[in-house]
Amino acid sequence: MAQTGTIVDHSLNLIKEDDTFLPHLTGSNREKAFHSLAAILSTPNHIHKSFLRIARESGEVVRILAFRVQHNDTLGPYKGGIRFHEEVDEEEVINLAALMTLKNALHDVPFGGGKGGIVINPRNFSERELHLICEKYVRYFNGIIGPDKDIPAPDVGTSEREMDWMMAEYKSINPGKPYLGSFTGKSVGNGGSLGRREATGKGVYFTLRYLIHNYLNKNLIKPNILMRKHYLITKIKPH
Image (cartoon, rainbow, N blue to C red; front, side, top):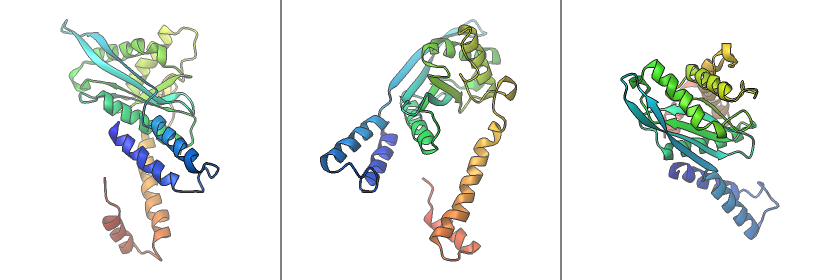
């Protein structure tokens, strides 16, 4: 959580110095409020983890470590993807869940932040085995997920296929309960959103477009294309 904690502390310190933000908080009351905010944003509400017991096609039984971190649900149900990767660990999932909280808040959508992870390389498992892993994940974490609790989505190593499998399992073990909103990122035929596949790429496009057209226009006087290129190369450094 160190990486996200540093971001949170730095951001809150900048906001705290801005007297126009929460102007009614002054002196020691302001210090206490921002200290509380830092504590809330830098720690998750819940960390759930379990070992999924999976029978492989070879007959071998393996136990696979899986996580679901629920960071903050002040704005609504937890929301965040499930990552399939051999190097995913608890700290990474905690950080990603915290970033989901911040992202949802910044975009003013009614969700909190959550994230999941399963420690596997999906390329090393057959389709049947991956299907079983998805089912077991839903069974093991069934009590904490759902449309009004925590809504998983695809992430690295997962796609609409895995979300379809997971939603089907959720529906199977929760008869009579609403299920279409239990997972996002599903295929369109199973209630997924049109345009989801293109959404990330479009987000990158609109971010770059804003950077070039809006941000640079505000920071340069009559910028031409050469000035824009020079500014982007010399002033905006990748982190």
